[in-house]
Length: 338
Image 1 (tube, one colour):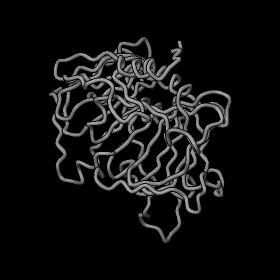
Image 2: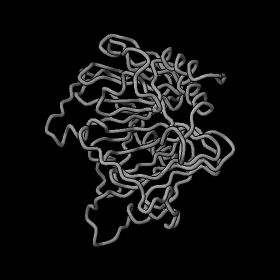
Image 3: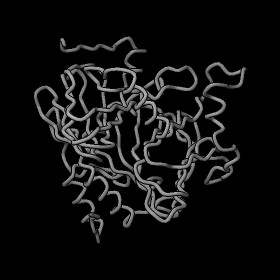
């Protein structure tokens, strides 16, 4: 069901009711909630807010905003977090580059929708993850006839003071797509230019859902799931096979029907998107029930475990800043005894 909004006042009230804030608004419209499970936003509210904003705000050249997204009020206080973004048919954001990682998981897309990163086009398909590392040009184009919705993962907490933002030279609004399809994938996976050891900026990265899904199934068939995480994959950097980015890792985990993981805690911050299924996460004794489309966070150093209450497999995507914590020498982890 899609929300019908007629005025910005109605949209603002809807955002406040669902503890969301729009990128076009300067101030939060609802006070932050407290408690270990406060960072939780329903998928239906997120989707309806996005589609409502698509009718009320404009983006791109001459528009009101450079992007159109909604973020959980409580999320913006975390070093890494997720929000959701929509592109209406025919829209394209203006190209720019900055000093933060901009990462995206596709939820809804039709043929004709693309991410454009460093002059290469990446067709949007549900479940694909595309990474725009710091100081890489990027924009998005919806050439289809239906809205496009994707999840953003940001590492704002690791460059809070000087987020240099630069547009294309000579007043150009959009990137020319000059690189052939799969350029980055071919040159930064099993082969790469011999002169480059670890380039800056890092290259854009594309993780098709078809590959991720196949890897999850291969892990499931290879052996028992991890007692604390289920079947867990990290989307590794094609440059060094390490974490997705120096500051954060994109992860995807499969919880089989009836699965209940053991409890553990770590001092990194985790944000989850429920890609498929439903279940709950118990955080320091507080139960958080989630469904497909939801976004929720687990605060640092809190005991937590996941339960799949769905009749089939459940799949969670997540971003976590454990790579930054490890590089800083601060990372700690504790696990319940089996």
